[in-house]
Every structure is written in structure tokens, then in C-alpha cells.
Amino acid sequence: MITTIYKLKIILVANLLILSNYMLKAQTTLYGMVSDSSGQSLEGVFVKTGCLSDSTSSNEMGEFQLTVPDSCKTLVFSLGELIYTEEIYDRKIINVIFPTGENPKTNLSLNPRKDYPYGIQLTLARPSLFAISFNYFHTEKQSFEIGICGRGMEIGTRRYFSLNDYGKNKALYIGAITNFSLAGDFVLYVPFGYHILSHNGMAFSIEIGGKTPSSIDENTSIIDFLGFGINFGFQF
Image 1 (cartoon, rainbow, N blue to C red):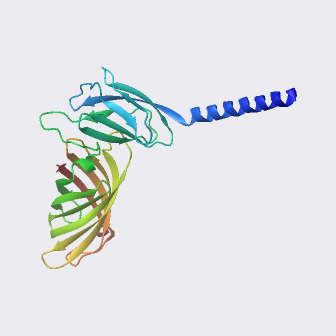
Image 2: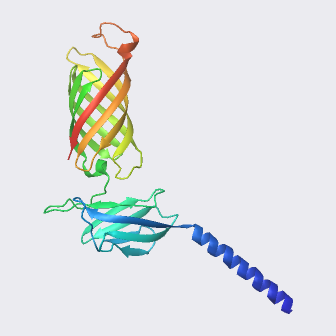
């Protein structure tokens, strides 16, 4: 009887060790710093996970440390009435920039394609030689645009694929842009590009693409099916 009880204790202890080891492996300790847009550290910012009640606050240096389950995908930062969320991804160091000033923009997601949905951009080259267009980010992954170009008028959309960099500034995209000429002809342009949008609203992208031929093109050699563009813009 004593031997049986002793064996059960050994099995129980072994199971507890295995379970505790699994729980330790299923957690990650995150480190980071909270600062304002001028780079000054912010103290007392409340930090918690988006799935459990674990929480902490940034110290006088703006630093925080928080152990979170691997299943948790977001962190929530709050300072007064301002609340922000940040995706964890596979990062162990997460730095956050809070907007400050007399009129801070509340509830910023820290994703510039969400925070600055409206914009104007200038495109050089492409099939139309130039284009000036207004664009709108319906979501951080989809934008629509309309404007004037060297052929007359253009309208189109772009689909963005975030590179998950710190600040969420960089993305690849593919689009479908239709150029309408004054003569009634049109060209469909399909660009593939690399887009950078800073947290002050400045935007830049470079792209290559293919297009359909048009009757106003002098010939249809292989170069007439290719396009190249550089875009400069500002989002607000």
C-alpha cells in the first residue's frame, strides 16, 4: 500500500513538473518603451494584454515589462482617455509612440493607413506620364483613388500587404488603375509596388506594372505593355 501511494506521488510530481514547464514555455516576456511624438519618455502608461487581466505601467523612463501568454496577440496601452492597441506578432520588444500636443488625435491605432485615410498624391511616369489623384484608405489594406492624368482621367484601387515592420509604415501592394483618354479610349494599368507611409502623413512608393494596349499608342512593342511609376503624397 505504501509503495502504491509512493508511486502515485512520483507520478503526480512528474505531471506537475511537465505542466509547469509547458506553461513557462507558453509565455513570453515583452519589453518596451512608451514615448511621445517628440521622443520624451512617458511615465504611468497603463499596459495590459488584450486577452487576460495581466497588466503593468511604464516607469519614469517610459519602460515596461510584461509576461504574456503566446496565445495573446495584442497589447492595450492607455493614458487618460487615450487608448491604443498594438499587435504583438513575434516581437519581444515593443515601443509605442503616443501623440501629444494641444490637440492630440485620439484613438490612434499607430497604423498610419488607418490614422490618415485621406490623401493626395503625384505620380510620375506610368502609362499616363503623370497623374494627380485623391485617395482614400477604406481600410489599412484597401485604398481607392480618382484623379486626372496625362490621358485624361483615372480611377482605381490598391490592395496593401503589410510587412509587419515596427510602426507599420511599409507595405507591398497590387492595384488596378483605369486611365480614360479624352478621345474615349482607356488603358487598364496593374501596378505592383512598395509603399512607405510615415506617421507624419508623408507617403512615397515605387512601382512597376503591366497595361493593356491603346489605339493612341503608336505601336504595340513589348515596352508598351510595361509601366513604371514613382508616387509622392501626403495623407491626413
